[in-house]
Image (cartoon, rainbow, N blue to C red; front, side):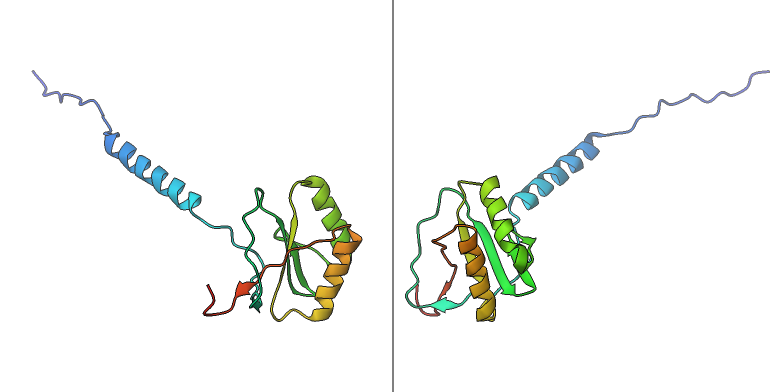
Length: 140
């Protein structure tokens, strides 16, 4: 007696289309991470100035000191307490001696806090600190 035997097929997974999809996803992730801008942790509204001058772009990006209020002070997007600010500035200068320090103070930041920040900068040995402003509307 003869039994019918099925021929076994070799299992085959077509990976060509999977490789295409993987390549497209890889290109997508590379492009989206390359063009993503660094967002600061503290959002501030810069004051407007009529007499502010735009300076040429420095060769290195400065260490940015952002002041929102007495509770929200950050040095290079790292939160810093006001009483520890002078020490943090000194250590940032030691870590990156070629980078300058620039101040970004919010429009609504209390003047007393800005003065304390400027005192901490002088205490850390920094004399000349550029400040970020935005031009008034209508001025290029």
